[in-house]
Each structure stands twice: as structure tokens, then as C-alpha cells.
Image 1 (cartoon, helix red, strand yellow):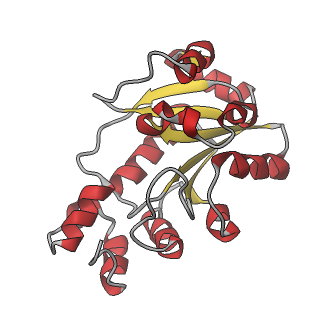
Image 2: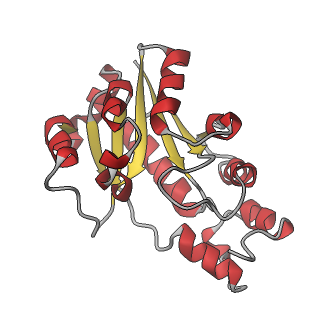
Length: 215
């Protein structure tokens, strides 16, 4: 079964940590495709610091010369970006004979019960949780119960993802990255260097369009 992973986010801005995590996941879980999917209007957080079109353009630049891909469907839809609707569109496009995985961070997974139609997500895809040191997983409540029921041990994840279309949860502890997009925006606003954390083409794009000077 073909395996497709979707790594959604605001990517505000996309930085080397995003690309590092995506490449690490693709290699470890042997995905045939891994796509970065910039959201248009995030339902769970404040509006991004720059437009979705700028963020999409930066993602395209950041993954040049890699084996990663970009999916622009949420930007093109021009509506609030609900993950369940994106996954429904992917299922309509590809049918049931493909394994689809939705990638998220621990912080998003902990709040999964607040997501729009969240109980339907595992009917449409697997969930890959990028676990980071120091970020606790839910230990009680509906999401904790779901994790206990659907979790796949790391040793069996590749086999499960390549043989089932949806329905399981896989925890992956990735190599930590030392900075966040929030810290990068603050550095750019204060005219501090962010060169170490951004692809050169992304940094040039930010500078040429004077992005993040006010956020």
C-alpha cells in the first residue's frame, strides 16, 4: 500500500527544524511521500504573522533539493483550515487503497478533543505524533483513552502504516531542534540574526518582502 504523510502547520516561518523533522519522519517510517501543508486560517491559534501565500512560497523554497513535497490545498481553499476536511478531500482524491498519515506535535495532540470533528480523524488517517522531550502526553480523558486503544509500538509502525489505510497512532521521538518559529519571529523583529535557522532562500525572501518586521 502506498504511504502518504501530511505535515500541516502555519510554518510562520518555515525553518530548518521543520525540514529536519519531516525528513527524519520520512526516512524512519519509510513514507513514499511526505508533504508539508501550510494552513490558511488556523482554527486553534491566532492569525499567523504573514499571509498564507508568503508562507506557502517560503515552504516551497525551504524544501528545494529535498525529497519532500508541498501540498497547497488549504491555501487554495481560502477558508478556515480544518484537518478533517483536508483529509476528506484527500480520501476523495485517492480512495481507500492508500495509507494516509497526519503529522502533528505533542502540543496539538494533547488538545485533540478541541478539534473540529476530531473523532472522525482516525477514520480517515493514521496520526503521527512528534513527541519531544519534556512534553507530556495526555494521561486521562478521551485523548488518553484513544492513545491507549490505538497506539502502535515503534517496532511495528512501518508494517502497520504500509498495510492499513487509517486508524492507528504512532509516537515518534525526533531529534530536538534548538529554536521555534516564535523565537525566530522575535529575532527578525529585533533585527537579530536568524541566519543559522533558516534556509538561505527563505531568509532572502523574508528580507526582500520585509516580513516579520512588525510581528
